[in-house]
Length: 165
Image (tube, rainbow, N blue to C red; front, side, top):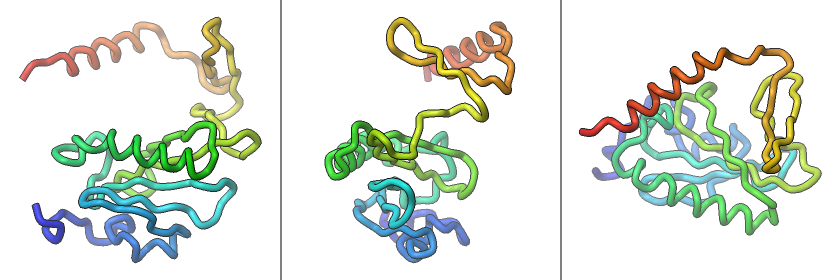
């Protein structure tokens, strides 16, 4: 599909591309036919970037076609470039569904001592270290869900992903 025919959503700040970069305090750094990368010009850490499809795609669950086929490749390439350019130990990826309803992945190069953290649970948490060295993050503000409820969603997901056709 030609670029000019790609779907855009009127009023979507991300669909407007570089035109909204000044307002969002970011600059355009790279693009191809399907994807665009911009980076923050302010904030509390260096190298914070955004990967977004040029076509209006509200959420990651709406990816299909060429964007779906290239998402991982582009994400890996951009993450590697950010890691190298910023000297980061790791590049954290965040995808939120609120705010602007246009898929955008936040890429956050993390270095020791910066303000970023890996906390994905709201409120006061306990960081329980597992024998493997991994962490189990537990919220003090929210009760753990019943095992049956968790298992039900696991089984439904397994069933959906293993359907043929």
